[in-house]
Structure formats: structure tokens, C-alpha cells
Amino acid sequence: MVVGPGGASPSLPGLTPSASTSDYPTVASADYVFGCMATNGQSRIALEQCSCSFDVVASLISYPSYVEASTFLSMGQVTGEKGVLFKSSEEAKRSVGDLRRAQAEAEVRCFE
Image (cartoon, rainbow, N blue to C red):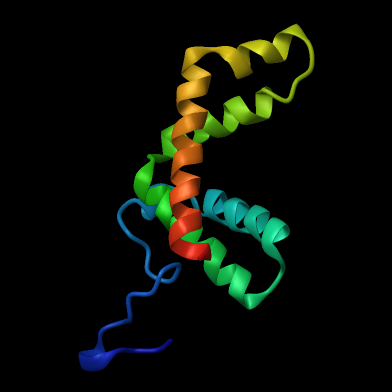
């Protein structure tokens, strides 16, 4: 572990849990980062960018909101009449929209 001046640990994105990221279970953060890396490459740079992206998303939306949006996205893939509710309801649109906005902010902060 690298220790900063005065014995303090450095504050780097993806390395120091914030209050918001600590509300997320480890498996949720790992799942997000693995999925992100599958899309963006399996490199050290992708790991850092995807960890940063998770931190940004977690700072913008609560874990329960993240689970809700993820559920709507997952269930929206169901074909036919059953999947329509998960795609077209106002609650689904709001929830998924919040997640998409958080991900867009993470894209700006971490990948550019």
C-alpha cells in the first residue's frame, strides 16, 4: 500500500471507498466493474476507468435506486406483453433515466 505524506493514504478514484460507494455491496461494485471492462477492454487502464465510473454512479444514485433501475433493464428484455410493463411505465422510465444520466456523467469524468 502506498502511503502519502504524514502517513495518510492517498485519495484516488476506485481506491478509497466513499460514503456512497460503501453503501453498495462488494458484489455490486465488482459486477459493475467486470461488465464495464467487458465493454471497454481487459486492461489496467480500463480497470481504473471502470472503477472511477462505478464511484461516480454510486455517488449520484443510491444502491436501492441502482437495483431498481437494473431490475427494470433486465426485466425489460423479456419479450412479449410481460416485458412491456418494465419498459414503458413512468416509474421504469424515471428509474432507468436516472441511471443513464449517472452513467453519462461517469463517462465524462472517467473516460475522456
